[in-house]
Image (cartoon, rainbow, N blue to C red; front, side, top):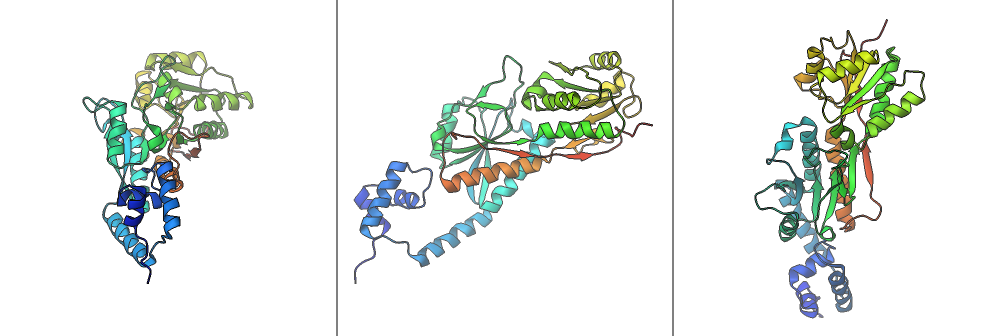
Amino acid sequence: MKKRPSLQDIADAVKVSKMTVSLALRKHPRISEATRLKVEKVAEELGYTVNPDVAKYMSAIRHSRSDEKGLPLAYLTTGMEKGAWRRSETELQYWKGASARAKEYGYYFEEYWLGEPGMTESRMSNILWNRGISGVIVHPFFQTLSESSRDLGLQFNWDQFIAVAISDMLRNPILNRVVHDHYTSALMVMGKLIEQGYTRIGLCLTEHMDLTVNQRWQAAYRVYRANHPIQRIEPLILPDLSAEEIKKWAQKNKLDAIISAEMRMPDFFKKAGLIMGKDIAYADLDIDLDDARYKGISGIYQNSRMMGTGAVDLLIAGIQRNEPGIPEIPVVLQVEGSWHDRGSTPKRG
């Protein structure tokens, strides 16, 4: 009886290791296309076929390992200190959503911080490659944006990785990414305020926040304002906000409602001598339902956990299709927010 060709037979013929042959036949992204094609060609010539019993056994082993921990993916972060992003509930929800979804696929995340002493982008790229990590999620950059500093880049050997970014902050390269649907959220808030009887509505943001969302909030505000019978009030967008600036702007434009995405807004109202929801309505574009600082504040809950979930779905799809590198046509997945009326936008009259 003729001996069934083995992985070692293919490895000997191609002059590579048995592990390389195994990875190539599974179309693993670590193996170059040239090597994979050569392995596949020799396997076909030798008449190699997968032993279904062995395949089933190995699959069971991999599944067993995945139940415990799984295969590693990289969660790439920045900032002055490791884990600084965890102080933001929105960004923590990205991680929680991503981690939970990765576990469903048989993977898990390891955080890799670009701020490690002596770390460079090139070195980090090599570390991930040498550890056999092919999938990378790029967490939003922990960096203040301005008009003169908004095109953030990351110099990796992208041909080695399947990567997905959360947010629009990474501009070089443009990767497949998941973003909150900021435009629809702003339209939703405007509509809710109009329903409640407000007509003099102002938008105020820091310059950083305006650029972080790629100016989608501002765009939606201007479009809605242009197509509805309400006052056309110019947004207040400054390098930083203050109670004094907000009070002066609100009085000048006789505002009856303010929209922002600013955790300091309750304090600004207090310092300006204004009672939120009584003297003037307030809606926030990024509320945290569990944070006491947002108690009584109406606005948009961004469903940030779904951002992490969607990022992993995009990432695993790329891994399964073996599509490393910068996408020719990037895919953008948007997650809608939910309106929550919590007291700061009472019905007028």
